[in-house]
Image 1 (cartoon, helix red, strand yellow):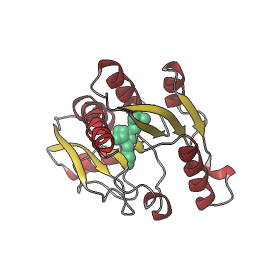
Image 2 (spheres, rainbow, N blue to C red):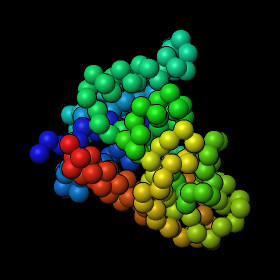
Image 3 (cartoon, rainbow, N blue to C red):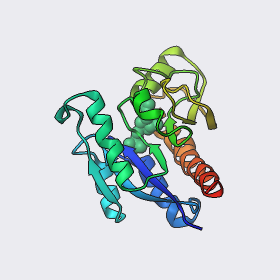
Image 4 (cartoon, protein in one colour):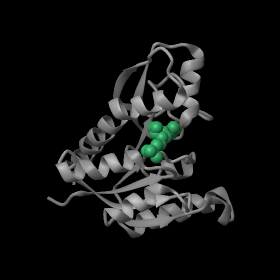
Length: 202
Ligand code: GAR
């Protein structure tokens, strides 16, 4: 059966992209194939990871676009040209509007580094999420993989995993633990679950 065609959208280091690439190698991700990586930052290390794995890349920079809608339309055309069926936001630091999300209902996944509905929504991304969790003083945090809709971090939850906060944690230390213990495990699993679902519906 033909594999679900996946595009991964990135902005930074791409460790979650790497987890997906590794999951393809080990077979944890077998119902879908990463066909394309799109970055909104020209210098994202995630692009190097994609190239090293022989995956096609594209870069779309917002400030080079006429408008926010033009930025989204450019991404949409690359997705369309490549016949993409599932979009995975893996550290993609730009919020997609309803114009974009409505075109892929239950076909866009995001990984967020907290237990939604805590520490999520606009302004909560990357290290800021961990800073907020530490400032609040919660003793448990984690990661969430969810479908993306028009509400920032508001789509249906697919998988979640809790991670312990330890005495003396800095945002950086906590970020690493959440990635290792939750994100890099959950994202490939969710990618497989949804890829399999799309495949079975063909
Ligand atoms: C990850 O922790 C991801 O969950 C987070 O950014 C980091 C990207 O790291 N995403 C968000 O905060 C989205 N709201 P990576 O580039 O190494 O995968």
